[in-house]
Length: 174
Image (cartoon, rainbow, N blue to C red):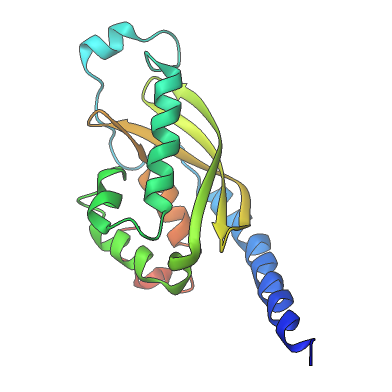
């Protein structure tokens, strides 16, 4: 009788492991390649202040990226706040609503592990996608973009995750 309760957890863990085996290669294949949605241009003063491939204040930018990614993937965050930290968030509202409506979304969060700037307005983000606090997609790769003076989760990052869903074809916009 004691074995009934633990059996649910191994089955869940096995399903999560199977998802990782299937999803990580797909997510990697759908990574940000610089194409897709247009990025906003940085302001001239911000451009003049930047050196190399980093924003003017890399530490502040990293902190904002971590905060905004955590906000975006927090199941308690309202859609309007998610849209504010998603690239082209207003246009992506139907995708956001579909992404947030799934039962797995209520248990999903993220832990940002690393941020590496590739330009003054773009960064590669390494993160763990957590389901119920357990890494389901460890060391996932995504992109943050600087748009309208805010560091945001890129559309391609969201769409790569949406495409992993069994109902991805029913989600408009990705």
